[in-house]
Length: 265
Ligand SMILES: Nc1ncnc2c1ncn2[C@@H]1O[C@H](COP(=O)(O)OP(=O)(O)OP(=O)(O)O)[C@@H](O)[C@H]1O
Ligand SMILES: [Mg+2]
Image (cartoon, rainbow, N blue to C red):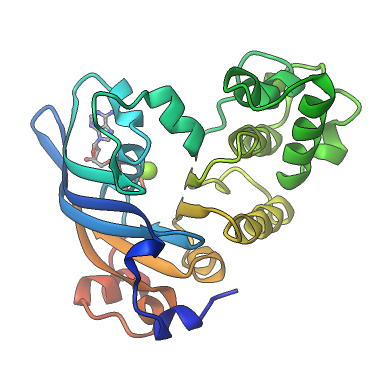
């Protein structure tokens, strides 16, 4: 699935969906992200890898302002989406999160029916004209998340009554229902069996035809399968960022090499 053509193409400014510059994140006095510059390209899957606690989730949450919800968290630096500062006071974080969707490591369905979990976003953002359109979006989203066949006969049942892996796919359906331009996925497959994992990886590959996807993963195999670009984080620093094939076969930094060969982690 790796698109080797990316290596032959220099990064064009028009391809940059998200530009992060000098990003710092603090939790109280803990300096969790240190001076990170990253370009996330459009129509590309970017993998964030690195040892536990290195700041992958923290940085991911900067991209749709989810850190705003953590009281002691302070974000500095610039993050631009299509050239616009997402931390500008004029930006409504709720609107931003419809454009930059997120799937969390732990499934967190709303205490609502399966149908309403998926319908919620398109409804509040006025993306559908009537019930028939909404039904279509709900079905298409559940199909994309490889959950439709398992739930089509019980759409009115509570989302929280599904198994862990089903709940995670429900959250993926909820995230894609608003057709986000960027989808942030924090270890989305950690609760999934190999079949559902393969289906989610297929979905990620489909999504990049139109959107950009950022996935945090502890699986090198998964990063190699689904991503075209990989960023390696270590102790809050972005150590190395480049084409996935290069990062895995010819890392430039010894810390990257140690991590991918299993010496640090
Ligand atoms: N809500 C929070 N409050 C205080 N400190 C936090 C919070 N979330 C993360 N941190 C700290 O920030 C640092 C980075 O954590 P983060 O969760 O981003 O790491 P990670 O790379 O996602 O790790 P993992 O692979 O285990 O998920 C850690 O030192 C962590 O303890
Ligand atoms: Mg994390």
